[in-house]
Image (cartoon, rainbow, N blue to C red; front, side):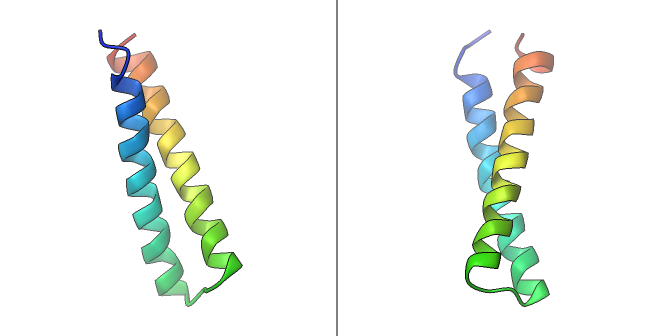
Length: 60
């Protein structure tokens, strides 16, 4: 299939993971560096997972 599809899925996954991290940090009352770390890690993990799933399962 198209070569850009996994990248698009990774970008969307990173955005969703970042928003989820933002909600999680707000609910936990975190701020500063701890909040940025949680948001960054969730964006990285969800983005990589989404891109990998699309690359290996949907558009091999």
